[in-house]
Structures are given as structure tokens and as C-alpha cells.
Amino acid sequence: MRTLSSTTVRLRSVATQPNKLIARLQSWWVAYLAWRLQCEATLQLERLSDRELQDIGVRRCEIDGAVKGELNRARAFSRRY
Image 1: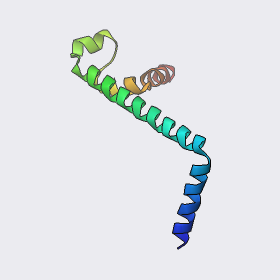
Image 2 (image 1 turned 90 degrees about the vertical axis):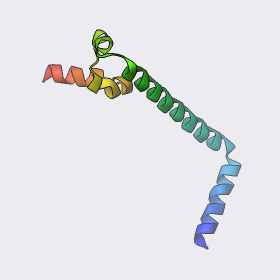
Image 3 (image 1 turned 60 degrees about the horizontal axis):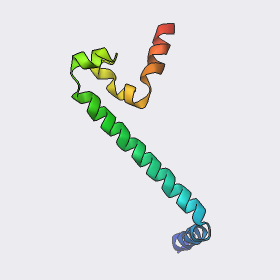
Image 4 (image 1 turned 135 degrees about the horizontal axis):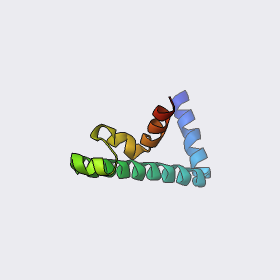
């Protein structure tokens, strides 16, 4: 019974604060779009030949890091230490 009442309270709070619901839905949508863009960028880079990847300075094993923006940070860290 307690679960039902807590669910009802949550639904009421969402219904009385539609801006929070809209903001949450927008943040989920933006996160979904960012994930889809990362997937597409990864696929595009994986389709390149090793020579083309070498031309842009990315090894095949670094594709995921490059797409997520972690590649530059990792390289900068390895150069210092």
C-alpha cells in the first residue's frame, strides 16, 4: 500500500510541475541524440581504411576514444609522463 501512495504522490508532483517533466524529457532526448551521433561517428571512422585513419592521426584501436573526445586528453597525459 505504501508503494501505491508514494507513486501517487510522485505523479501528483509531476502533474503540478510540468516544467520539470519537460526538462527531464528534453535532457533524455539530448542524451539520446548525442549517443546516436557518437554511434554514427564511430561507424563512419570504422569504415575508413588504415591509411585514411593514419592521415587523420587516429589508430583503429583509438576510434572510440576519438569519438568520445578522450583521445586528446590521453595523448596529452602520456606525453607529460
